[in-house]
Length: 141
Image (cartoon, rainbow, N blue to C red; front, side, top):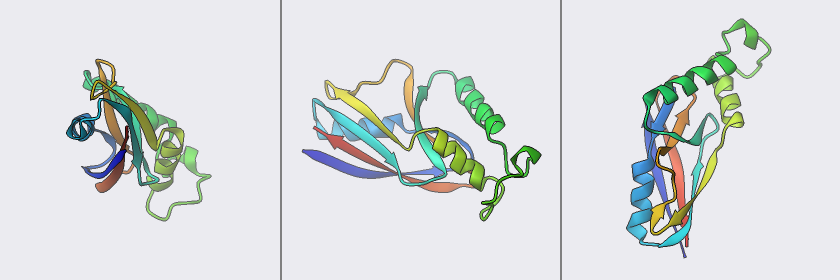
């Protein structure tokens, strides 16, 4: 049997938004002792990742790294970009999403997500403006 839900996350600009608790609550609400939770983000300018959730410096450093790796289209190094329809962060956001994941699979063991001690689930927003992002949660038993 499988269950599905769409989770909406409101972002306030670029950065990592943790939603581990919402995913864990979805799993526990269905009482499946074993299974697989699949997460899929329905957008092309953000992504998903599992990352440390204890030290906020990790999130800050990841955001800074990706900003240096793929700067704004206004940066002279990005002069080759053609797609600029929605502003200077648009195509860089698509590139960052292509370098990361748009779906994740997490085993369910003993009715709980099999995450490690310091692991959290994040939406990685790559755009500067606020957005409402939809993530599909699919639990298979």
